[in-house]
Image (cartoon, rainbow, N blue to C red):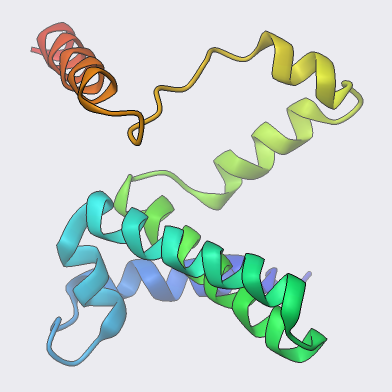
Length: 132
């Protein structure tokens, strides 16, 4: 069975970790780490949203491809895999989306000011202490 195109792209992305950031956009993104990649993913998601509202379908599809690419780069930077994401999606199958959302732990919003940012820092310190 042929590999899914997203899995093939992910393999390519991982291989770029060893590439020269001056010659590879992917390597440059990976060098910036999750914060830089997440920022770029947010920009691309915004472009896809706008394209969904005002652009033709080919332009929208191209923007969706950009979102998927940048999401895969972020997944690689975090040390996760598409297979982990697939398993999470499979786990949710057959469950009401409303029930799944109601049972989720609330995410900390980084965009809600200094209090949220300090919560994220405190949570990171707690995780670091547990590991160490």
